[in-house]
Image 1: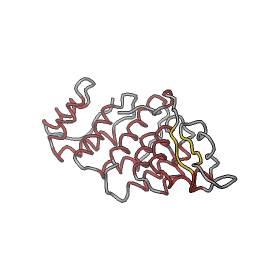
Image 2 (image 1 turned 90 degrees about the horizontal axis):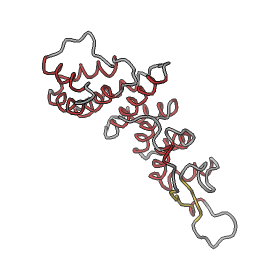
Image 3 (image 1 turned 180 degrees about the vertical axis):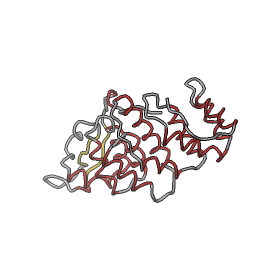
Image 4 (image 1 turned 90 degrees about the vertical axis):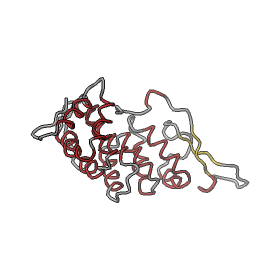
Amino acid sequence: MAVVVNLPLASDIKRALDRMKSLQEGDLGVLDVVACGRRAIPALRALLLEGQSSGIYQPRCRAVEALAALGAHDVLIEFLSSPREVADPVNRTGEEAVISAAARALVDSRDDRVLPRLLELAKRQPLAGVIDALGSYRRAEAIPCLITALSEDYSRRAAEVALLRMGPKARPALLRSGLASGAIGGMGIAIEPQSSPQRGPPPSSNWRFVPTTIPASGSDGGRRC
């Protein structure tokens, strides 16, 4: 389990952190930590950035939640800017859950550094949380990453939802990608032509998004905090 090391802690912060790391009372511990105010940020940062990658990822996800509640977006951006190489597959899955949580926690941030960081992450590691967060911006420069994420089981649903939110803005890129006939790779989005008096294929302006049935088995990919 992740631990905070080499950091002197006030007694109230230590109690709150211990509770936050509890599997039974962890959510209440988040409230306790947030109640300590910004004094708790250094300890939360240490837990997030210095804590060991582990299949027991909930304590560090809760640290993400507390940091977001305290407005410590700088720490979350720092974490996303410091990727780790984790060899063990169980620990790697836990680390990916924390990365997804941090990405989602930054959705409401107005920091100009967030979108470029999410784009970089999505190109390297299109996790569901990263794609969720990236899609929330509804920016055209995110569309190639969203289309690429359709091919990954763990990010497919998030990419589908994001592209549907994009609406007509995503149409040209999807047409260029050859994903415009029938369902997109069978992955849950279809683009079908609206009625047109013209003969032959309709122009791109006459196409619309149609959600299709998405199998539950590939819904989110990876764990969520």
